Amino acid sequence: MPDRAPASSLAELTRVFARIGCLSFGGPAGQIALMQRELVDERRWVEQGAFLRALNLCHLLPGPEAQQLATWIGWRLHGVRGGLIAGLLFVLPGAAVMLALSLLYVAAAGLHWFASLFLGIKAAVLAVVLQALLRVAKRALGTRFKLLLAILAALSLTVLRTPFPLVILTAGLIGAATVQWAPEWLGKHHIAADSTPLATPQQLIALTARTIILWLLVWALPLGLVYLLLGPHHVLWQIGLFFSRLAVVTFGGAYAVLAYMAQAAVSGFGWLAPGEMADGLGLAETTPGPLIMVTQFVGFLAAWRHPGILSPLAAGLLGAGLTTWVTFAPCFLWIFACAPWMERLERAGNLQGALAAITAAVVGVIANLALWFALHVLFRNVSEFGLPDLASLDWRAALIAVLAAVLVFGLKRGILQTMAVCAATGFALSIVPLG
Image 1: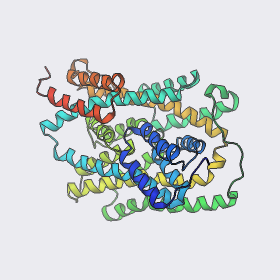
Image 2: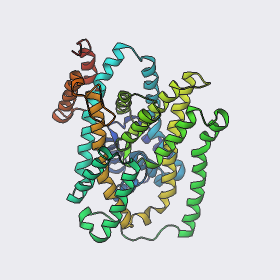
Image 3: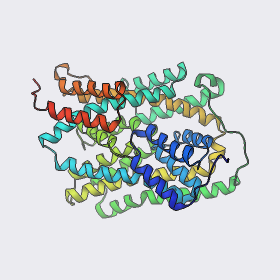
């Protein structure tokens, strides 16, 4: 029996990824497990080794690794058309659900019942983030050196307020250097055996250059239209620029970049209140697709509240669409530009070392995120230095957070069930005064 069976047709690829896109709940871990079962174990469209090596390299790229892995699989099976189909179907179902939930969010703003539901959802998010932290830590921190990198990353973000991109860049440089003189500090890493490239370096360079130029134009097209039609002072231009920059530094997935995005959206631009970031992540947790879809929620609210000459609805829809475009168009650029080089990249030891160190640092980033959310969900007042007012503890949020932890860790319940129970509990407790 062969190790890999080819996809029978582009239509079958489309059907399978439409199913994956609608069922991809549970964050990157659940999404990658779903693709493993559907594409490697059951259909044998991709061999196990290639699947794992591609996943490893996707961690090196900015953006959601699960969506990029889906794009790579589609490209491997049916070229650029397959990559577009797989990547888009991985995103579009979640984007549609997220847009509907965002519309409901602004329509129900100020309504007591809606705020009560989100009291429970925000508290439940704490358990989900903690679960993500433990999962990533278990996989990433196999040596004491990696543990040290994670601790230093967390302290840099929490105490020194070091910018997120600088933390990631520093970790990558440390990993690339460490693998040269003390590789055992980073543990064992698989490097693919030598094989003959399917194309010469000159051919690959020419193909890569054409791909980069094309996708840079695709990426920039809506930004150019916003600049020409609305000018550089409109919120849509700010949204496009901000999330384009974010797309370049989104290493480690949504959890890793969320603290950086929250600081800018809440403190920098004033688009959202701190509690609304937790609302957005709660919505993203209940939808299929990449968790980075929370960016669409931020872009929607920012444009809705600062529409300029547009109506709030039109601005919100354009903000959501623009945010989604500039968030995911770069993902196709990275994959289509790098995919032809996969065989060479798989043999690059320095990159493997950088990946190991970055993954370790991401654990510290997620720990910083968990702390940030806990403070803003559990306490009504948090100082600009990140210190909570202990007297402002919301006992209802704390109680629901404990309930969520029991459901997630003790009873092993799924995200949707946990969110539903906590939302109902929040609604029930909302009749009790804070005291």
